[in-house]
Image 1 (spheres, rainbow, N blue to C red):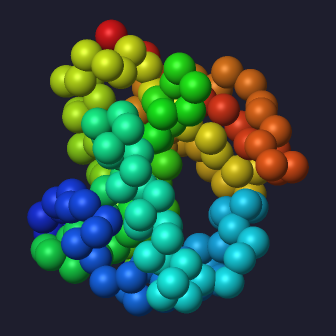
Image 2 (image 1 turned 90 degrees about the horizontal axis):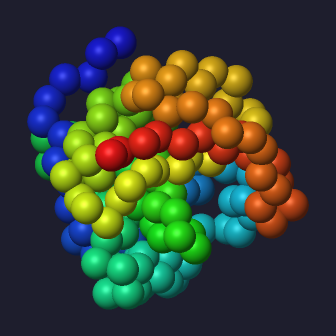
Length: 159
Protein backbone atom coordinates (compact mmCIF):
# COMPACT_ATOMS: atom_id res chain seq x y z
CA UNK A 1 0.00 0.00 0.00
CA UNK A 2 1.38 3.41 -0.95
CA UNK A 3 0.67 6.15 1.56
CA UNK A 4 0.06 9.48 -0.10
CA UNK A 5 0.20 12.99 1.24
CA UNK A 6 2.65 15.69 2.15
CA UNK A 7 5.52 14.77 4.45
CA UNK A 8 6.85 17.58 6.58
CA UNK A 9 9.43 17.78 9.34
CA UNK A 10 8.81 19.51 12.68
CA UNK A 11 10.68 19.73 15.94
CA UNK A 12 9.91 16.95 18.42
CA UNK A 13 8.93 19.56 21.01
CA UNK A 14 5.88 20.30 18.84
CA UNK A 15 4.48 16.79 19.41
CA UNK A 16 2.55 15.77 22.51
CA UNK A 17 4.79 13.54 24.65
CA UNK A 18 1.91 11.09 25.12
CA UNK A 19 1.80 10.54 21.35
CA UNK A 20 5.51 9.72 21.23
CA UNK A 21 5.15 7.45 24.27
CA UNK A 22 2.33 5.53 22.59
CA UNK A 23 4.39 5.19 19.41
CA UNK A 24 7.44 3.90 21.27
CA UNK A 25 5.31 1.48 23.31
CA UNK A 26 4.07 -0.38 20.24
CA UNK A 27 5.66 -3.86 20.18
CA UNK A 28 5.93 -3.72 16.37
CA UNK A 29 8.29 -0.77 16.74
CA UNK A 30 10.36 -2.54 19.40
CA UNK A 31 10.96 -5.51 17.07
CA UNK A 32 13.56 -3.48 15.18
CA UNK A 33 15.02 -1.55 18.10
CA UNK A 34 17.32 -3.86 20.05
CA UNK A 35 18.30 -1.05 22.42
CA UNK A 36 14.70 -0.26 23.36
CA UNK A 37 14.58 -1.74 26.83
CA UNK A 38 12.57 0.73 28.88
CA UNK A 39 8.86 1.20 29.23
CA UNK A 40 7.77 4.45 27.64
CA UNK A 41 5.40 6.83 29.37
CA UNK A 42 4.84 10.56 29.13
CA UNK A 43 7.74 11.38 31.48
CA UNK A 44 10.15 9.22 29.47
CA UNK A 45 8.95 10.91 26.29
CA UNK A 46 9.51 14.36 27.81
CA UNK A 47 13.09 13.43 28.76
CA UNK A 48 13.64 11.99 25.29
CA UNK A 49 12.41 15.20 23.64
CA UNK A 50 14.65 17.27 25.93
CA UNK A 51 17.70 15.15 25.07
CA UNK A 52 17.05 15.53 21.34
CA UNK A 53 16.60 19.28 21.76
CA UNK A 54 20.04 19.38 23.43
CA UNK A 55 21.48 17.96 20.21
CA UNK A 56 19.98 20.88 18.30
CA UNK A 57 21.53 23.32 20.79
CA UNK A 58 24.93 21.60 20.76
CA UNK A 59 25.22 20.71 17.06
CA UNK A 60 22.72 22.92 15.28
CA UNK A 61 20.99 19.81 13.98
CA UNK A 62 19.10 16.90 15.47
CA UNK A 63 15.99 14.78 15.27
CA UNK A 64 12.67 15.83 13.81
CA UNK A 65 9.12 14.64 14.11
CA UNK A 66 7.82 13.40 10.77
CA UNK A 67 4.31 14.38 9.78
CA UNK A 68 2.06 13.11 7.02
CA UNK A 69 -0.52 15.75 6.20
CA UNK A 70 0.11 17.20 9.67
CA UNK A 71 -0.29 13.86 11.51
CA UNK A 72 2.65 12.51 13.53
CA UNK A 73 4.05 9.34 11.93
CA UNK A 74 7.46 9.02 13.59
CA UNK A 75 10.74 10.64 14.41
CA UNK A 76 14.34 10.59 13.30
CA UNK A 77 17.09 12.65 11.84
CA UNK A 78 20.77 13.33 12.25
CA UNK A 79 22.77 12.94 15.43
CA UNK A 80 26.46 13.63 15.79
CA UNK A 81 28.30 10.48 16.92
CA UNK A 82 31.95 11.47 17.33
CA UNK A 83 32.95 12.84 13.92
CA UNK A 84 30.07 11.15 12.11
CA UNK A 85 26.52 12.21 11.41
CA UNK A 86 24.31 9.20 12.00
CA UNK A 87 20.79 9.09 10.58
CA UNK A 88 18.01 7.27 12.38
CA UNK A 89 14.39 6.72 11.44
CA UNK A 90 11.64 5.35 13.71
CA UNK A 91 8.15 5.21 12.19
CA UNK A 92 4.78 4.26 13.54
CA UNK A 93 3.65 0.89 12.15
CA UNK A 94 1.02 2.55 9.97
CA UNK A 95 3.85 4.50 8.29
CA UNK A 96 6.39 1.70 7.83
CA UNK A 97 6.02 2.07 4.06
CA UNK A 98 7.22 5.68 4.14
CA UNK A 99 10.81 5.07 5.23
CA UNK A 100 12.51 5.56 1.89
CA UNK A 101 10.45 8.65 1.11
CA UNK A 102 11.29 10.25 4.47
CA UNK A 103 14.95 9.27 4.22
CA UNK A 104 15.25 10.77 0.74
CA UNK A 105 13.94 14.12 2.00
CA UNK A 106 16.33 14.05 4.95
CA UNK A 107 19.28 13.13 2.71
CA UNK A 108 18.44 16.14 0.51
CA UNK A 109 18.96 18.21 3.65
CA UNK A 110 22.34 16.51 4.27
CA UNK A 111 23.45 17.11 0.69
CA UNK A 112 22.86 20.84 1.14
CA UNK A 113 24.66 21.03 4.51
CA UNK A 114 28.43 21.55 4.30
CA UNK A 115 28.90 20.11 7.80
CA UNK A 116 27.86 16.64 6.60
CA UNK A 117 30.45 15.01 4.28
CA UNK A 118 28.75 11.63 4.70
CA UNK A 119 25.93 10.02 6.64
CA UNK A 120 26.06 6.75 8.55
CA UNK A 121 23.18 4.38 9.23
CA UNK A 122 23.04 1.59 11.80
CA UNK A 123 20.65 -1.15 10.77
CA UNK A 124 19.63 -3.75 13.37
CA UNK A 125 20.21 -7.33 12.34
CA UNK A 126 16.45 -7.94 12.56
CA UNK A 127 16.11 -5.84 9.41
CA UNK A 128 16.92 -8.43 6.79
CA UNK A 129 16.20 -6.14 3.86
CA UNK A 130 18.62 -3.28 3.30
CA UNK A 131 17.50 -2.53 -0.25
CA UNK A 132 16.16 0.91 0.72
CA UNK A 133 19.60 1.98 1.95
CA UNK A 134 21.21 0.65 -1.22
CA UNK A 135 18.66 2.59 -3.32
CA UNK A 136 19.76 5.72 -1.48
CA UNK A 137 23.35 4.94 -2.49
CA UNK A 138 24.59 3.77 0.92
CA UNK A 139 27.20 1.02 1.10
CA UNK A 140 27.68 -1.45 3.92
CA UNK A 141 31.01 -0.81 5.61
CA UNK A 142 30.89 -3.39 8.38
CA UNK A 143 29.31 -4.30 11.68
CA UNK A 144 29.42 -2.43 14.95
CA UNK A 145 28.57 -3.38 18.51
CA UNK A 146 26.66 -0.71 20.39
CA UNK A 147 25.48 -1.28 23.96
CA UNK A 148 25.69 -5.03 23.46
CA UNK A 149 23.72 -5.18 20.20
CA UNK A 150 25.21 -5.75 16.76
CA UNK A 151 24.26 -3.43 13.91
CA UNK A 152 25.13 -3.39 10.23
CA UNK A 153 26.80 -0.06 9.47
CA UNK A 154 26.22 1.75 6.20
CA UNK A 155 27.71 4.95 4.82
CA UNK A 156 26.40 7.38 2.23
CA UNK A 157 28.77 9.95 0.76
CA UNK A 158 27.18 13.39 0.46
CA UNK A 159 30.10 15.15 -1.25
